Image 1: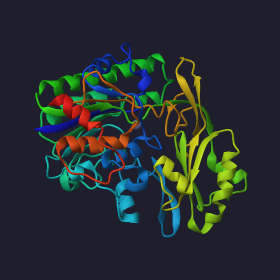
Image 2 (image 1 turned 90 degrees about the vertical axis):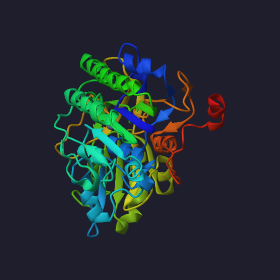
Image 3 (image 1 turned 180 degrees about the vertical axis):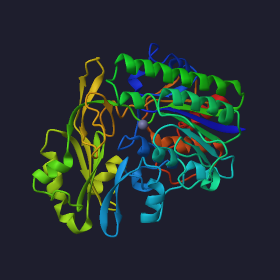
Image 4 (image 1 turned 135 degrees about the horizontal axis):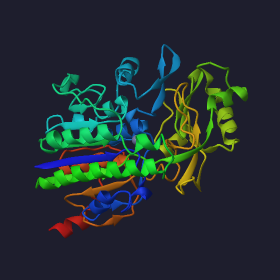
Length: 423
Ligand SMILES: [Zn+2]
């Protein structure tokens, strides 16, 4: 039976895969094809990546534009934290839909189903299947088809111990089960990378521990002699936060918006940001864009049709996408990649000196991807450009599920070459 199993080590940078830090992943690379030009989406943030992974489409088409977004309600823009468990029901109420493209869970509902074990934010977990076609296990609430509560919820904590306990259940229930698609999404090394400097002893210890969990699950998958496509990777990397900028305060200081007004709303997304402008104020967009371009802390700005370059679209008030300035400078532990971060909403940590992501910086856009299974040669290195959105078409092709009109492409290509080698 064709199956697909996906293991994601949240936030793992491709350049931090090495025989010292991640020996299990290095060993797996010998059995798999590894993709050395793999990229995240924009913003390079977990909830955005989760929706792009699940739908095979960028935010412009799946409708989930950020980790933090603005939604229009009663003619006014309001900020929403996508990580909260109530985000998707709220979005459905305000906009009529959760995601605007079908998820793999929906496409697989009558073909063996999808099961997701997830230890990141509730919103990121539910982005895999917001309407309840398969089963999502999460510490904030586990639910099966029809969004009904499951008999045995996932009672774990964020971090490496919870990841380990979750992986135990994943092996016993999902790997040993029959679901067409099973996804294990660890909270590490991302959780620790946000709290300590990249390359520090605490970070490296967590990296090793997450690698050991991945190694154990890979071994369990290998024990089952099946036509399994095994995808091991990450959703984005991290940059070190070198500076924090309050974009909303900047716009107020520049006289572009009134303090506290909701006609221009900044949605901070780590080292990226989305700026929403009420349609009644659309004439102010060029001035806001000009002001942002004039600062040293902005790396790239996209608006109008150019939003398509980062997989976004000028819909529902989204006017400008910002990737904060990034450099290849190193931190105190010699780890390269330093970025400016957008100051997060009140009450959230700014991560100064620690890891962050969300923008287009080199290292946050260098996640890991390795695929083992039919059509993928052991030990091969692929240097063609690949993206998170390519995983859904690749998985659906392996499972023999028809799909069309996705943003991503099937990574079995060049199919002819692999087909000849197989026959
Ligand atoms: Zn992540």
